[in-house]
Image (cartoon, rainbow, N blue to C red):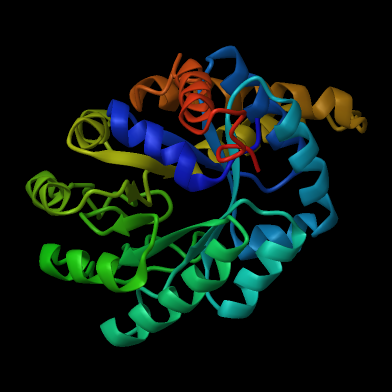
Amino acid sequence: MLINGKDLLAVANAHNFAVPAFNVSDYAMSNGLFEICEEKAAPWILAIHPDEVSHIGHEVILALRERAHRSTVPVAIHWDHGGTFEQMLTAIQIGFTSVMIDGSMLPFEENVAITKRVVDAAHVVGLSVEGELGTIGKTDGQAEAGTDDIIYTDPKQAVEFIERTGVDSLAIAIGTRHGIYPSTLKPELKLDLLSEIKGRVGIPLVLHGGSNNPDHEIGQSVKLGINKINISSDIKVGYFNAMRDVLTDRELREPNLIEPPATAAMKVVAAQKIDLFDAAGKAHLYTIALAAGSRRVGRRSDALVA
């Protein structure tokens, strides 16, 4: 079932779990992630950031939408880390059901302005919007952008940001970094800051840079109110390391021999994340939510369906 991000995360917020947002950079990866999420009966977000969009092409989004419509679990297709209003318009035009506008590197007022502009455009056509306040750290040049020194989210600013922009979810900075941590950096989340922010805001909170953080911290962040966790590097490491192993056989050339072991390795990583986020078995909650919406309006509700 293809739905938008607001409805996907509303259920997670109400039932205190986190939806995995797995970044997809090729179609074989998407097939494996659909499979494992369906096996685990877990809702998920198929996330694609601008570099990945340019790599896989706009036309693939139509195929991903068709696969999501046929899926037995709820799925949102999400433009990750959008940097411009024009990118958001592209996401609307080519079939995304959720967008993120990342103005975290901008001064507060400029971040509010561009986020509000995106919200106004996206909400008209039923897309949900994720904003970001505070900055995610960086580890290397391969992952999404970040800062050398993390700027932690200010709880009072978070309240003002949400009120002034109308975002459906908010990515916060509590200590994560994009990419894989080098030995010189120690992952550490400010869970007390997360608790304070959650106590002040009602919308779902998002954790970017979820790869390579200690499981006990990630698990605790879910209990304290994180409802979406982005995972990119961890599944790509599993996928491409397995592919490198397979390609030591220089005679192999057919994708149906090369890609399945890589997909299987990625699915192991994704399954562990789904369990860690307490998302396994939660797909049935969306059927309940859809039925409840139908009863409220006296007919079948299309609110959840994209």
